[in-house]
Length: 367
Image (cartoon, rainbow, N blue to C red; front, side, top):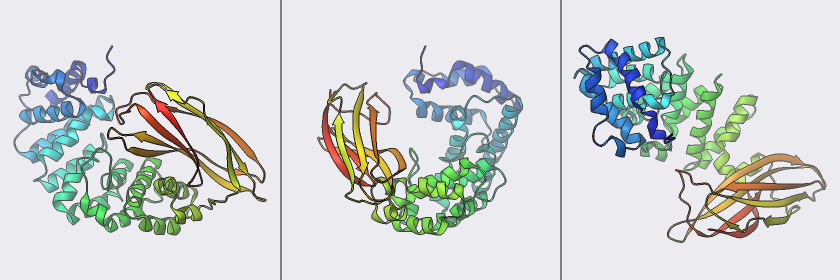
């Protein structure tokens, strides 16, 4: 049995979807739709290409008038929800793609449909071309959505405007100047939905990569508002913490004291095969006369194809270590093949980080 993610677009899925579409689109030809989907290039298409191909084929069966087509898509979603046709939101990403591709010249109709569609399947990628094309007009719409009664729409207002949303097209103007985003985040900082608050944290983390001072000012302003907001800003500072930014370390009372000692740092698997795990151990000793908060992390210097290294930091834990207390830890880091990183054979490096400061390093071989 195949477990490739692109196989979510199966014959069974399209047959079920076609039954719904046939209830909404006049003179809809189910057989022709499925034949058009599974064209001669289907097997070679990857996930994103299959999604966009589905959007393209659906366009051939919907009216040329975008407003009419968008209304039909909204009715399809009504029917899908009535029939409890919920596979996962990923399968239906061709619906936001349709609005992005064919609705970019129809602002009002697209905004109306996006608001409805995102309550069924997220439109975080679809809104970005509208932000680029319409600028303040679309940003103002995102602000209005931040006050929406539905938490999925509120989440879209933050997630869709993230300056560095992974896998999405860039928003260069907002990377340069995130000021238009900040009032929106103010609206959402105390949101009742963790789903929304996590998006706000991710947005802050994006901003911190280009404008750390902006985020640090927000953190100082929001600190103490409530337990949930404190967790939000801590998560939003994760890149600053991983980089050992002095001001944010000081803010969270993470001292770089020389009396926080690392000993017994050893790589147990100095030769690791791709597909297996790196294993290492270490001990941290607080030699201070008072308790210390410690944030433990490790960094992997991944070897690149050109022979240089790229560092990625992983959090282990954050805890209070009493005076003269020691903790001994053993950790593993997987080198199983993943789609988001390519591994290269050769010498890599591992570092142990305490409160943002690299305390020890060691090398290992990836085979």
